[in-house]
Length: 334
Image (cartoon, rainbow, N blue to C red; front, side, top):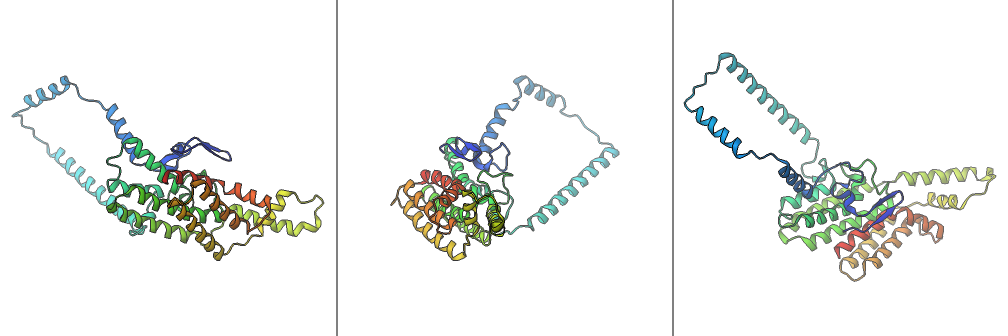
């Protein structure tokens, strides 16, 4: 399972602390196969089973009522007819609302439905029978793994999100890394765990996942990046009037606020990440060595290829969640 990690104010002992539904504060967002199993088991354990005496009483009553004729009054018949009409009207209204609701979403895009990214992949695996022969513990581990892989991208573009995602507002650079890493991890999951007949459908979902998130990332900038840009502008415009010297932290923020990352920069970084992730998936490099290379590429992208130690330390801490999260799920995949 997941190892302990600490990201700023957030501490968790394993990813199962907000497993499946990305829930870090006991707020249920969506369930999974494991949760459904636990619900059914709990329901069965607490359900009331009629005693032998109760069952005999029912049989005795049935015997007594044999041959008894029941006459329904006109008033009762009228009431029952009205009740049937109301039920039919209610069903018709529910169907109308369902069709109206369905029209709001793209029927060819499962990620356009209300739900987390985890739920899309998990539902497909469940429908294909992937979990049928897995124990409860194995099911939980597989679902935790899918939850970890898809968590960060869901925090950006999922249709159902946590109110306060543990990863915080991802930088545009970390988000690009998350897309490449999570997509490669999903393909590794498919290759490692799925049979050939399941893989075709699952791989199609991965393609849709990548396309949807790639479109969402075009022009994306986090609130922190805009904050850095604003601070850099303030420092520029007030430089001649300052009495107190600029602090080291302000210098770092000023440098980051000046970084301009183009789509060409993102494309070059993505190409490097894909190459590094392929070596990781093919076990040509260890997880830790691969993560170090991936992080170097991310730091260079986020810092504008700066060599300043303060800047590199800052962006490394800023994007720590993405790197450590990737380290955890890749250790389970290779």
